[in-house]
Length: 158
Image (cartoon, rainbow, N blue to C red):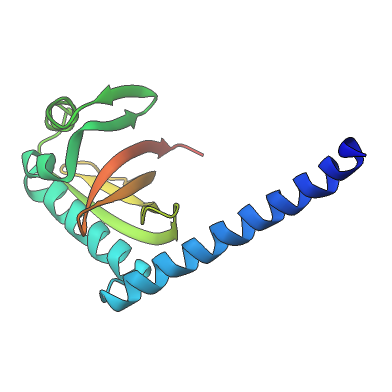
């Protein structure tokens, strides 16, 4: 009967879609390797550039975001590159130094995106104690270049 075939057929199709998705992810990883873009190396280079720029000239981060980008900063959602940089430049300190302790990354889909999770310490000028923080970036590939699509930042008080 038709209904008795639909369940096995549906299972077969879902397994096949999963296998196709896995093959596509592997092809994307291979394309990145061919372009010399090891995901861990990209993540490390991005993190170094982001925090060096943040510490020296927060306004210089504008080119890393686009109008569809979103920052969630301590629970407050901000969208658009100009609004994000306005938030970052309005923070109540002039000088700071990020010390990164961990960087983890993984591919985020067949389009070549990447999730980057960072933890570290933030030392504000004139303050005795460093603040612990965590930050997650969703980097999206746009014609071989990455931009920040999502950015979530939290201080860790525990």
